[in-house]
Image (cartoon, rainbow over all chains, first blue to last red; front, side, top):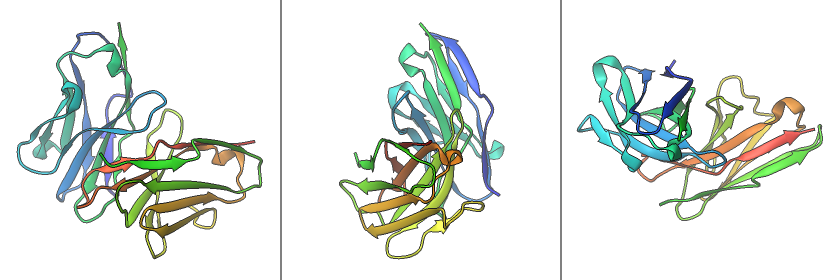
Length: 113
Length: 115
C-alpha cells in the first residue's frame, strides 16, 4: 500500500537556523508530491508541489524541496527559519492514476525567537 | 486562488444525534471531493472520496453507514456523522482538487465534539 513517512515528529529550532524536514514515500509509479503547512488554528495551505521537470522546487515563503527519485524522497528545506514558520508541516503524495492525497504523519516545527 | 468553504467550523452535539458538515467549492466546480479526519497531533487520514452524481468511495475501515456522504451538486458535498459517539470527536477536513487534478484546496475544517 502507498505510504508517506516523515522522519521528524517535532523539530525545535532557533530563528535563523536552517531547516530540513524529511519525507519518503513508497510507490513505484509516477507521483505528484506536495508539502502543506498548517498554522495554528488555520486550514492547510500549499507550500510547494512537484509534478515533473526540475527536481528542485521552490515554493512560497522561501521554502524549497528536492525530489530524489532514486531515494523516493522529497525533503523540505529553508535556509533561515523565522518565528512565523512555527506550524505543522505535512508531506503528501498523489499518484497519477488517482486523485486522493496520502499524507505523512506531519512534523511540528517550533521556532524560538 | 480557489476557495473551499466548510461549515460549521465547530459543533458540539449529544451522543446519539447526527451532525451534518457541508463542504462547498466557492469559485470552481468539483466533481470529486475528499473527506479527511485528523486526530490531535496526528496526520490527515482519508475517509472517503465523494463523487458528484454517484456513490462515495470509502477507505478501508471507514463505516459507510456511520459516515454518510452526499455529493449533491458540483459545488457541494456533505458528510453526515450518524448516531455520533464521543469517539467520533475529531477534526474533519474536506478538500477539492483543482481542475486538471493538480493540487488540492482545503476547507478550514470542522471540529466535532460529541458529549
